[in-house]
Length: 80
Image (cartoon, rainbow, N blue to C red; front, side, top):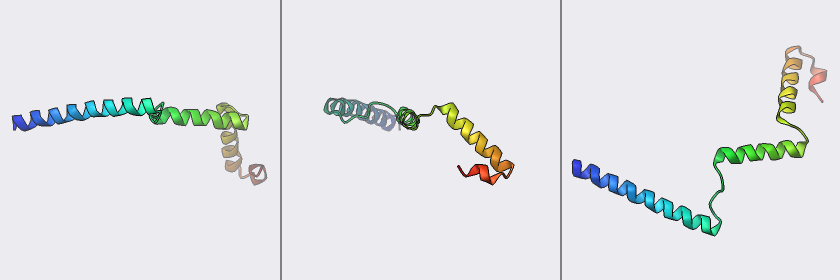
């Protein structure tokens, strides 16, 4: 069992090294994503807000206004 565990650790280490080399090649080819998924979403959010001419606080304020109008059942204000 100890030998099997050691062999698994060697396989894992080999896979990590292969991944590192593949990432280097992808980076050279320009195929590696420049940032994490979260960073991409944050950048996308900023672009959408900029395109809409808004900031995040504006969106939060509008959402809160809409929630309040719905709560008061003032449906004419909901439709804008």
